[in-house]
Amino acid sequence: LISTTYPSEIFPITINSQPNSSATNNLTIRSTVNTNVTISSSSGLGILVFNGASYVTVDGNTNNGSTLLLRNIASSSSTIRLTNSATYNKFLNLTIEGGGTASGVFRMESGLSGAGNTGNKIMDCTLRNRSDGTGTPTYMILINSSAKAINDSIINCNIFNFTNTAIYSSGAYAVLFL
Image (cartoon, rainbow, N blue to C red; front, side):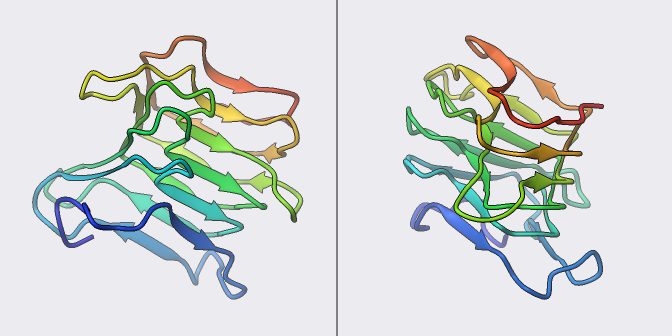
């Protein structure tokens, strides 16, 4: 990321499955600017969609301590979605905001293909309502009824300002919370 805002970006930003991705052949998204970065949209499909993507790291922390804020201002959509067996992705040091959505600010869902979302980590993040004061989400992390979320981790995160349940799984497979 080389700018502090992205007002003309077309959302959602979708990262699809790449056949050669691995633990050693991965993608890291991190800010290179020396200030806080905000990516905000009213997309009904979300800000970031991991469509079968594997081994992607989104790191909101730069060397100087700046942060990355992802905010979806749509009232009926998630901010980040994992679908179609998104595996071994990491979400680090992010502030993830949404408001008024029953879709969950962070959503794991099944799709047309794959065995499930496995080995993903949400670590040292803040998941919250919109800090601009508009809307309070129903769920922070939602795992829909047909999704498989196996060995996914939520580690050392601040989760607050929601109306129903912080982490909600409607019949999905086991999720590992640390």
